[in-house]
Length: 483
Image (cartoon, rainbow, N blue to C red; front, side, top):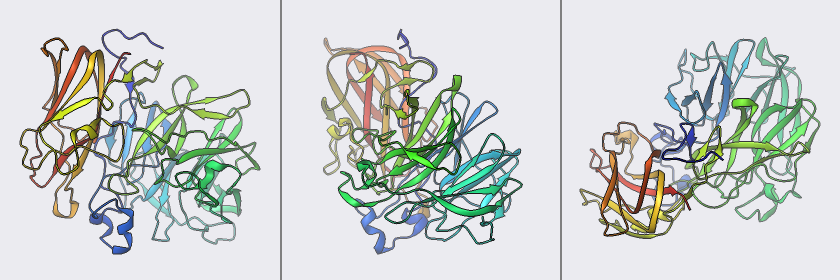
């Protein structure tokens, strides 16, 4: 562990990741409509929400390219800081859920799920960010479109430039399928698809439900292939992305299409706290030949698919089994855990106001689906926590909550302008201010480090949104310090 002085290392990050311009969810009313048969997917009234999930990452020429669900891309040169990028398309092509990217013979191939549309296509581009054009629908060796449905597809290029695809999901009697594709004509399959993964009910973590209570029911999805030490690790996720028990499993084999042996323990699993429901993502090579797991995290404050994105390092034991320790505190890419802990969880809280049952204490409960919302008439909202003793504070994370987003009516997210004020425990004297009132980035999750401050009281205040129909609150405000 790197020794902390007055500031944290430059390659520090904290889950969920800081990613600008979170998009409106595919299933939000502005994008999918307000059909009554989908009302049960919402925790309350049907309304717009933001989501990001299912991240696949490509390492190419010194940069990492992340392609999460809902059609945007992020690029990093250090894994800790990510820049938002639009993906370019040649002829109006689009991406759906669960995109996947690979580089094969100097071209970049991209595909995704199109639930509800029965659609499958593979796109190609000369650069990772496009412009992408469609190559058409993938077919098997008999020129039959690949089936069953093209859900959660994965494209994988082996070291010899042979190309493979994996897709579909494994409920009872179903499965994840794989096929080799012609690397010179990526929509042309070689031979017939083979089933490579199916539901194993003896692995309790695969069973459907938040407590894996359905012994004969599953939802095995989110496939992702990675080659490590001359073995092929095909990742899958269970038991449903809306559950806190959502987790990553893996099968291992000596060839891209198997046969595979299942690892009987989950690779990545966390059911509680700000970072939970850790499934559907993929592995990528990091600095110094490390391997990193990118994954989905659960919010479900508004909608069952309201999610975020995280990452952590993959470790391999002596048997080659993979394990990921999920983190929710500041980490260094090069140095690992920094020895900081949350010092603000469910401490004594006061606030300027509250709306309904959205009390100030809910900003500090380390829970994803509760939040503090100031009263709509509160023109100068603030919330203050008493840490109950002085701590050395190095960093903070704000997970903002929003109400009123309506893309159809141009009520869109805005950058949060805010500041943190620090006070001593003895006499409550001002000791520092971290001022972000000029923030111009739309950061739904905001994590920042600062010069070490010793304080007992911390107040967060923020400006109300310029659009009076957009109401901002705080899902979690977490301060990180030394024990």
